[in-house]
Amino acid sequence: MTDPSSGLVVRSLSRRFGRRWVLARVSLEVPRGSALMLLGPNGSGKTTLLRCLATALKPHDGGATFDGVPLWPERHTLRRDIALLSHATALYDDLSARENLSAWARMGAYDADVDALLARVGLADTGARPTRDFSAGMKRRLALAKALVKTPRLLLLDEPFSALDPHGRALMGDVIDEILDRGATMVLTTHHPGLGARFCPQAVRLTDGQVTWRGPSSEAQVHAGDA
Amino acid sequence: MSWLWQVPAVVAKELLVEWRERSRVSGLFFYSFALLLMVAFAMPNTKMLADIAGGALWLGLLLASTRSLDQSFKVELENGALEGLVLWPVDPLALYYGKAIANTLVLLLVAAAIVPLVIVLYHPEIKGDPWQLVGILVLGSAALAAPGTLVAALTVQARGSSALLPMLLFPLVVPVVLASARATMLLFDGDLMGQVDDWMMLLLAFDLVHWSLDGLLFTRIVDEG
Image 1: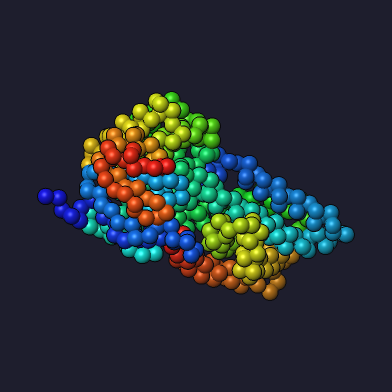
Image 2: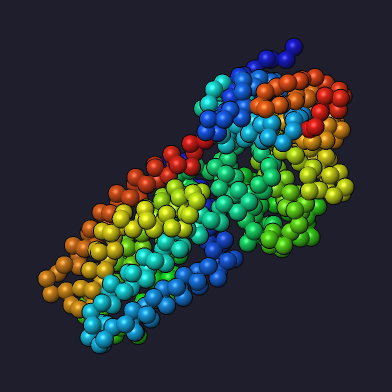
């Protein structure tokens, strides 16, 4: 039987911006080594939830634990093992792809094989080019390589397949499979339940910051609504 | 103190970004150069020019510092790198000191470029020890960079940050500009009463206070969630 405290446990998590509650008493669980798909229309709170789980935002009420460790109070320790791939790539446009990865690895004291990471995301030949010249899809792949620098135990992906061509989507899928095979826990948001269901056995639908449906990903298409 | 080993990595990243975008630093130089040139043309005689050389030098550096500090955080806003840094296992203290050291080095680079211009344009006699000028430049640049890095972090995400930064920074660094300009002018004109050391001590005290306290305040700003 799985230890109930292992993996990601979110309890009554709420977050507001100003007076507007963007997340209201969200509770969910993702067992260690498993993946959860977050569905919901734009503005439903998916990205805010991911940012709370990444410890970029402090919940105003409730909280979350990862492997039994409270996220916000222990954020400085946990950030070493949590990776967030969001729309903001957090890359320096003036630096080359290789320089970006090296700089981030050095700052976090990660012993990363930068060339291997670039090859893994299909950017081995463009490692010397400034990322300013990269397309949105290439930046997304480089951001994925940056997330891999951490070898994350908790991977948070905000619409990982957006801006990617079919080749990029296949590559992203392979990398996600690898990370899950290593035993990482994952939360993924998407507007395409069919794509996410490949990795996530369970899905949750958010509407106006509240969980309005949860169930197997195979049924997500029916409950996706306008997600 | 485990964050100390992270500081060199942050400084290296900052300097690499500055090097890749060298036009930003050269822009600072030309900005200061234009100011020095205008002041020089506005002065009615060469005696007065020599008298205000120290003040003009620090006016140029002060204005260059506001542009430099603003730019150093604007880079972090591109692509959400600032949030990326916060979520990376980099201690906010290492982030602050790395940025403050890099900002000091950029200011010193600008100073190294405009000091010869001040000498050529304003003809100060430099009766004091030139090495003391190096000391004043280092202490003064560090004293501009320490609170400047904090204020830049505070204002960068605000609307009109480019205007807000000098509004908040200038009152804070009035003692720095006064002490640096006065020490430089005394160094140029001859320090008969031995006052340069006192002004430098004032700068050192300012540096000690701000380099020790501002990092803690920076931590609260960038990691409040």
